[in-house]
Amino acid sequence: MRKIVLILILALTCFSSTVQAKTTETVPAKVYEGEIAGFDDTSVNLIDTTATNAVQPTAVYEASSEADAIAYARSEMVKRSKSFSFSLEHSLAKTPKKEIDYIMREAMSHTKKPKEGDYLSQITRWEMKSKYLRLEEFGVYESTFTLTMTYYTDASQESMVDDRLKRVMPSLNLGSLSEEGKIRAIHDYICSNVTYDRASSALIRHSAYSALVEGKAVCEGYSSLFYRMCLEAGIDCRIILGKADNEDHAWNIVKLGSYYYNIDVTWDENLNSYKYYLKNNADFSDHKPDTSESKSPYFNDYTISPTSWSGSTASVAVTSVSLNKSSLSLKVGNSETLTATISPSNATNKAITWSSSNTAVATVNNGKVTGVKAGSAKITATSNNGKSSSCTVTVTANSSTTPTPTPTPAYPACKANGFCEYSGKKYWYENWIRQGTLTDPKNVVGDGLSRGREIYDGSSDGWYWLDAKYEGAAAFGKEVWVPYIHQQENSWTDQEKRNVANGAEEGMREYVYQCMKSGQGKWVRYDENGKMCKGWIHIVGRLAELYPDQKNNWYYYDSVFGLMAKGRIQIDGSWYYFDEITGVLKQ
Image (cartoon, rainbow, N blue to C red):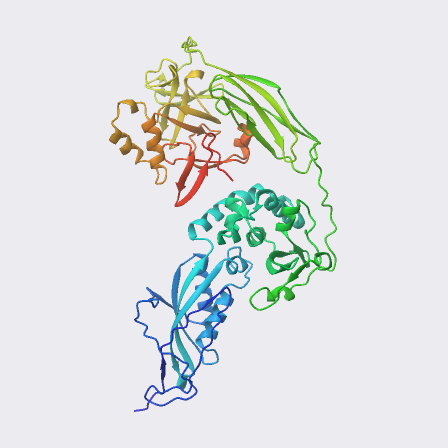
């Protein structure tokens, strides 16, 4: 029988790297047939792979080729897998150490896909342990690699980045902009929404998550977010590592036309300028790329524009802010929207911050003022450069007297059950009787008043609000406070309330229960067709016309009860924070 020449090497090589490992490995220089030979170099150690400190793979992926191994490693890192194993048969031309170096470097190479490339390499650290057979007669290694990963962000945090970008990117209206306009919009968004964190040394500050979700980052966080957003917008971009003013720093190069330009969003945010926006190398001379293998060797592969971009970057400052009213009177629970006017009309940054001097008396959200209790408060609108204008709000208590019901119009009943329309309004009938009027015994009651009632229409699979104030007309394009989640709630035991709340979606159940337990009731919203909103709602289009003061805001409503989310809520496995008063998703 023909003997097969084998060398069996059980080697555990452990190392850490951002792109490649830094270890040495000795391969036996001599082979003896049919047995494990002694080594010429005694520095090679044999390690028991059954030891308790060894990595034991739970499943091993069998890579069909080097390219397949690269694709597998990349996909596992994008998923933020904490460990993974794969086997690969590869040429003797590369030792296992050199092979894994190459695979991991290529797995984190630039692919022009937003979640890969530089976005991975800047926040990923790894350790490897390997087992391999050296089959000299066949000219191959049979290697099994087990990698233990460390990331600056986990899967849930990356999910929050994905969700936030799904809202942020459309809000920038990039589709209507030129290529430079897209770059500027992304640059300006980051400069306006991220603050440099000089106090923290936490690794999370080096991530796009920290910049986008928490609003704080260091240079790698800025550059990673810029990289991610540019690639999301279809603009090629790279992260560059090097020195700036002789300190370690990270910035970007971005493609515009036929050339790449240098851009440093971090320093532009700190300086509140465009000093480092789309520059050539000569105008970016205080930045020195590190083109060593472990940093940015690819920098020299890109053609940097011989001239800096010459378009206008001048900004127009706000000179004044004015409100449409200097004083306002409200009843408790009522609301009115103030309008702020910016001068000049072509100001670059028209952002307005609203505030109340006494939120116990009156609150304000994007100009919408709501009376909370009797008293006075000053509502102030302030521009980004400190220009402001104020309105004095006086809130008075509601009368406890029940208003005299308005006589019900003698509308003919058009059907026994379901909706009928009169003069552009929808009314709901049951057994030929219009529902939701002031005298409807099924109405919910709040503050001593008959408010109306919720009804379910099976034909549209939706819940609607019949407003008693308008003789039972279905509300549309309206936010409604329903005093209790269910009319019989006061008579329920605590366990009955818990049982009902358990019908809400996971993540909202405890919040629904607490609202029921405290008797708070719920805020719900009805869309332009009168149907109760559920899930994520973005105030754009027709809804923005109905709620101009809430334009571009995001809200979330329980998919069962329609309850507006407030406070810290878990949705689909990710945590979000909604304003405790207004329910607006906090950026």
